[in-house]
Amino acid sequence: MKTFRLYGVRLLVALLLTLAAYNASGSSGSEAGATWTSRTSQGNPLFGVAYGNGLFVAVGSHPDPLSFASVILTSPDGVTWTAQTSGTGNRLNGVAYGNGTFVAVGNFGTILTSPDGASWTQRTSGTSNWLRGVAHGNGLFVAVGEGGIILTSP
Image 1 (spheres, rainbow, N blue to C red):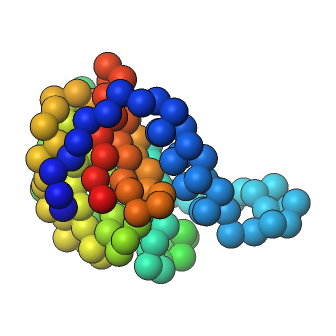
Image 2: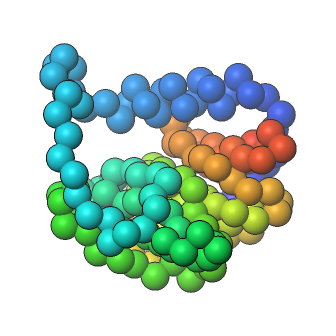
């Protein structure tokens, strides 16, 4: 991935998050999302989920409230979930998919990328701020976090 660039334009993030949400909605029916079924997360608090290339990826943290260890779960169907190794001890708060890549963000400026949801590579964000969310739209990843930080990567 290329170097992340820092912007202070909140409008850009709002527009990209709206675009990502619009593109992610695969159904135009009024009943979509009306009925929900509980699935197990193996007791892990989860903070973000994305879908891409036939795979759901959910991210979060270890269930111990004093631990900030990361958790990544993958599922081909949203029903059966498999734990993956992240390679970071930092909690993960958000995940997105775009351009054939999953991007997960978390505490202390953590950014991870993966082509398949199973093997993850740590990237340099240039910040120690906690990153709270990430979206992909129009060929661009946008990560946001504490202190109003906004990072972008093509």
